Amino acid sequence: MIDLEQVRKVAHLARLELEAGEEEQFTTQLNSILEYVEQLNELDTADVPPTTRAIEVSNIHRADQLETFGDRESLLSNVPDREDDFIKVPKIMEG
Amino acid sequence: MSLIRELHRQLTQKERSAVEITQSYLERIKALEPQLHSFLTVTEATAIAQAQAVDQKIAAGEDIGLLEGIPIGLKDNLCTRGVRTTCASKVLENFVPPYESTVTQRLAELGTIALGKTNLDEFAMGSSTENSAYQVTGNPWDPSRVPGGSSGGSAAAVAADECPIALGSDTGGSIRQPAALCGVVGLKPTYGLVSRYGLVAYASSLDQIGPLSRTVEDAAIVLQAIAGHDPKDSTSLNVELPDYTQNLKPGLDCKGRTIGIIQETFGEGLDPVVDAAVKAAIAQYEALGATVKTISLPRFRYGLPSYYIIAPSEASSNLARYDGVKYGARAEESNLVSMYTKTRAAGFGAEVKRRIMIGTYALSAGYYDAYYLKAQKVRTLIKQDFEAAFQAVDALVCPTSPTTAFTAGSKVDAPISMYLSDLMTIPVNLAGLPGISIPCGFDAAGLPIGLQLIGNVLQEQTLFEMAYAYEQATDWHTKTPSLA
Image (cartoon, rainbow over all chains, first blue to last red; front, side, top):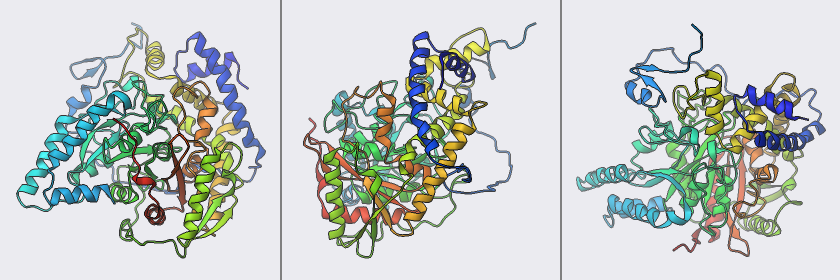
């Protein structure tokens, strides 16, 4: 089962800032969900292969061809913070 | 009678123009939205312009296609170029897609008129549409109740006749459950039959786009338009499509068909009124000539716990992209990690955060085998149960939802109680099968009940024909909510 400390760790891994109340609430709710999914252990799956996709299709290839996207401005206009054609982000290195 | 065919007849016989039809739906949206809140965005100006183009063709004596001039509502997780696509999330409040989803592109090329974008649970995570960051959609049969979810806006809009047809998406029941709760038809196609290109990803191994409509034939017409191979979706199936509507003719029966009743879907937790309506529908199928068998799917009930590991795991990965860098909302912070964590804290609602947390936990070091791998193995067992059943039957039948529409607010703080609402639809997604919900009755409060038919891989035509035969023999689909 999951405790408050683990909830904080998972939130950090998920890059989610949780308020104190949310941490408490998620600890309770995640525990009840994890308790609910425990019933999966009633099934013996030792020799069962996992299903990763519902309908098997494999080796889907297409030619790796360059295509110019015609409307740069429609991409750039979605950028939260830009300078000309550059995307601005907080500094990631000192100096 | 197919609503699309009726509108097409009005257009070709010049009883009404495309602009008049579009205007009448836009007026109905204006009149009903204050109580229903099914649309997040209404694209009035482009809708009228598109309708004018159809009218010019008709005036010039040109033939028009069956879908030309037919208005449609689009779930707001389908990317529409130049039209805001929010996924009902604050994080995408101002997102204007630079590209068009394959399904909306195909429908636009066939001349449908997009009326706007419909409400949903944020990122399609939910069963009541209450997880929208913007508004709570009312059920047209009783606006104090939920329309189901996550395609609740599309289902409510079709039920209230704000649009004749709509598109939804279904990851664990998000088309079929709201269709049932709103008394309309909803189809989830076989995984891979419809391109997911431009559908904002929730759980990629389960997501499928499909139609919601008033009649079975309308759903078949829309599926015909959106199905088919798309090189832009690597999971898209390259198969020959049948003509889904060719046999949908009055007099169609179910002689020679075998239906399997899923034994495990009856019993504890099933509303007695739903139980009775579904059993009456099964009797109707016998009257239509079908052979009815009882089938056991012993691992069916493990679908829900399996789903609540698999879907959040995929979601936690898919939603990592909302980091405030290239698009979407951004929290202004001087440090990169706090920019991420605060952007996501402010941008996502409680249910989305909950699923990201479950998924991140299930995929994290030390827990992967116990949760994610285990759930994927159980997924195999659920698939095997279906495969065995389809050796003996043409379609499986069960309730779509264990209850009729519940009161808004009654389950928001009880995640598992809300999740149980999808108990009967989720296994179908895990196995990648097609499923359809059709109206099969009403409870004492006048709320609709849905019947779910499940088909084998790519057997949509069988589902449409069996659903159509039932629809012809009953009049549930002709009932409409009494809205002002």
